[in-house]
Image (tube, rainbow, N blue to C red; front, top):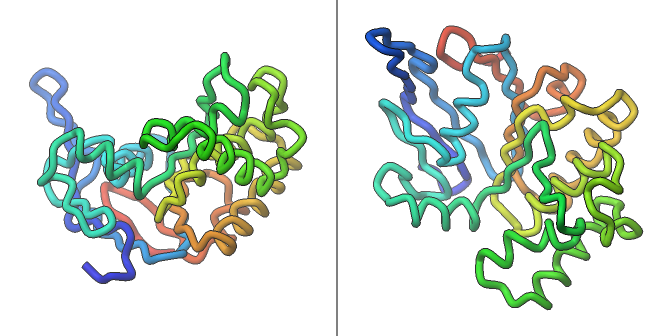
Length: 227
């Protein structure tokens, strides 16, 4: 693996057993994501895009092939070490923000640092800084119910970035936003990528967002193809 690659997968395959039926979702996926690179993955619904993202993030184990995150083959380490690797090297953003409703924005964003063992005062300080970067400096002490949809997604991006990950994996991050808020989030992702030099791998149906990335790859019949 090149030192410049933050994520790499080789001949990745994933199958599921449904009774006596074997369902092949991914057949032979190869991908290298370089430092600070923005990659979009597109394809029809049900093509396996979210499955691929889960494999790249170490949230699932492939049937065949390997995934290397920040130089580590995740198949060769246990779940506890995979969790620490995810916390150290990756950030995650989903279509739904998954913010915990009982906590404020700053508490939600500080949580990955707290799980890492960072002292509460320092975790809160870093969370406040990242929330300011995403334009939520006046909303950081509000709970999710008090935030708009666009604000909740920006808070989710802040939570993904607070640990200074090598790569953010995003699954349909603009899927629940109107055009105005989706465009604002597009701009934010580009800005954060350039500011933090963080790689982004984004699964999306949003063609405008996809074509603002450095590369667009299509997942079709179990393999990735360049546009």
